[in-house]
Structure formats: C-alpha cells, structure tokens
Length: 114
Image (cartoon, rainbow, N blue to C red; front, top):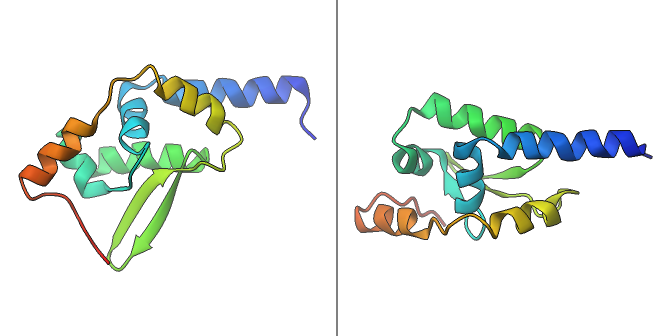
C-alpha cells in the first residue's frame, strides 16, 4: 500500500510527463482513438525516433498501451491507469486535435488494419 508521500510522487510524475506539450497533445489525440507511430510522425512533423521516445515514456508510466496488429503497433490511452480520472480531467482543457487526424485521412495517410 502506498504512503501519502508515494501517492503525491506518482501524481507529480504523471503531471511532469504531461507537462510536455508533445506528450499532452499525444494524449489528446489518443483520447478517443488509436494511432500508429507513423501517423504521429506526420501530425507532429518530427522524426520517428523522437515520437517513439515520447511514446516510450508514456508507456513506461502506464499512461498509454500498445496493440500490435500485424506489422503495426497502435497506441491508445490506458484507461486502467490509476490516474486516468486526473488525465481525463486535464484533457478537458486541451483543444480538440481531431482536425489533425481528419487532415491525415484527407491525405490518405491514416493507417487502417483489420
């Protein structure tokens, strides 16, 4: 059982991770749907290693989970995380990022697998 100080430390670490604009935006993008690394590379206009590093930090903290489908790995928010209620509340203050995914679809860059 965690002490009060350990709980504060956990919440602090979650907030620290989400204090990064890219990671916070990723969490907003993943709020209602899964995304592949290559889709996030397109959205953020940055390198695959950079996106993978952000996702690794979020995954290591249990904030996102991955789902492998064939050669693709899709990421989504981990609703089972003990701080998910806090994250969900924080995401209410972040503007919708759906336009980014809509633009990917328009360009034919969304990954779809069955």
